Amino acid sequence: MLISKSEKSIMFNDAKILVFEITQTSEELLQQIKNRGWFETELKKFSSEKRKREFIAVRLAMKSLLRKEINISYDADGKPYLADNSYQISISHSGNWIAIIAHPSFAVGIDIECPRKKIASLYTRFLSEIEQEELSNGKDLNQIQLAWSAKEALFKIIGKQAVDFIKQLRIFPFEVKTEGEIIAEHIPTNTLYQLNYIQSTLYTLVYCLS
Image (cartoon, rainbow, N blue to C red; front, side, top):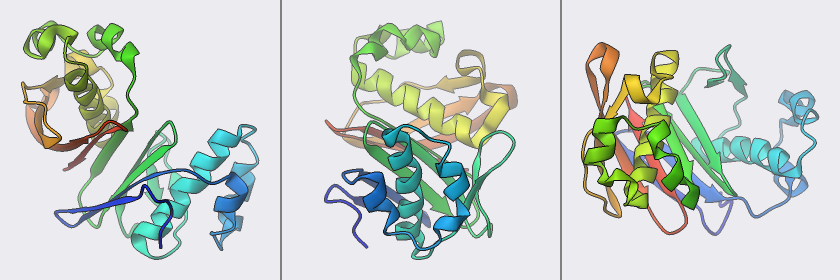
């Protein structure tokens, strides 16, 4: 089931990942989903066409990824989960891009970000002084963007115990490539995580299994 010409599928340690660009209207996307009654009430809350497209596109992406329609709900902390608990999931969107990841047992986190120059003026808000020194002091925008996405992906796994990106999450030095790995630490528990990334001219993608 092809959603978009820009669709990219990835398999990693039994995790299924789908990245694609939204190119259709909300109505066109909606026509491809059978069980619309699951979310019609929630969809009506959105007045923005962009939000409607994102909301429907995520559900269409999950249908494409898992080859079946499953209702997506959210817990008290806003974390998404499948109604049948068949997979652990994580969702991200930026611009017109959507990224989702699903694994049958591991907790997962994913973040996608379109390029943005303003990251150069924001990095001190999410990197400690040590991280700033080790990660080019904000000079390498690609590296800074990856560090942000890595912390976002980890937050989606860890939750409230990682809400303070500077004090609770630590990114270790890494080399910027088209594809690679990032090692990070959840400081309060001394737990290390390995994250994988893909970086292109269109987006930065970081994902993690735990």
